[in-house]
Length: 353
Ligand code: ADP
Image (cartoon, rainbow, N blue to C red; front, side, top):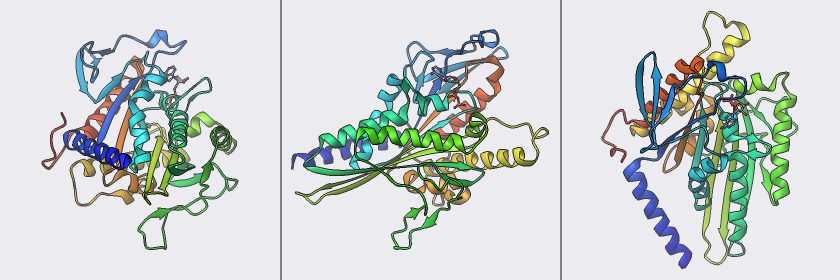
């Protein structure tokens, strides 16, 4: 009974928050200047000491102001960033579907935020470890199963990163059971039963991503990497069931590729990236504006995530910014994208507080 009361209270609080703020958050993280970059970096990004939702860019003598839900300055640690997304992550134990995207040009810190570095992991590892420890604590009242899939989307094709069918191009299908759910035949669902399994997931995913390409950095900047964590819970004494999904997405680089320079396979890559990133923007806009038609099918990325982007699901866009002057125009583009995602275009949805 206590659990039920707590659940009801949590849902009520969540619904109230959604009513007030909408269920799409946009954060921005500015990466630090890396070694060797000092020359080209100037103080073009500044922060508001009083308001952590504001970011200023000085561009050709003009000061531009961007308002987001939260801005992380370059000194923000992986731990600090994770603290801000933690409640979103654990809400999938209560049955919510959540998407966290890292968006930005190549080199802006997307992979650092999501994957992290070996001695300082990012959101992906922290999220899976936290979920595992939280559900372990709920035993024996609740019995949870955590499964993990890792997918790469490159040129509108899906690749399984946790299995041995690397060469196979996977497709998204409608489940024949009539449930209306999508599934991907051939995609591994790895069941996590111990902390060692978590290490195995990341080792395997990393290894498989690296082996199939000659230049991992180049390849990963042109493909989307998705970590999909499903949490299914069952309470045998009350008969309650929950199912939530957490999608952690390291998007392909958002930089505009010079039309004149790109041809052949580079051109095709650029077209695929543009298509899926703009499809993602369109889907989020349609959801925010409560459009009756949401164009999920316009890209593999949005189609695969359609069940986690609609309904009462929660979305967080982490827009990554490079602090360099040479990246200024791309930073402005990314922040404009962030503002588009964040502001309501149509309809009478309540104003974000
Ligand atoms: P992207 O995935 O957007 O292409 P990366 O995550 O690879 O960018 O980041 C580019 C470089 O900057 C990497 O060397 C990365 O380690 C470093 N970097 C990015 N963000 C941070 C940060 N917050 N702290 C320290 N180094 C960072």
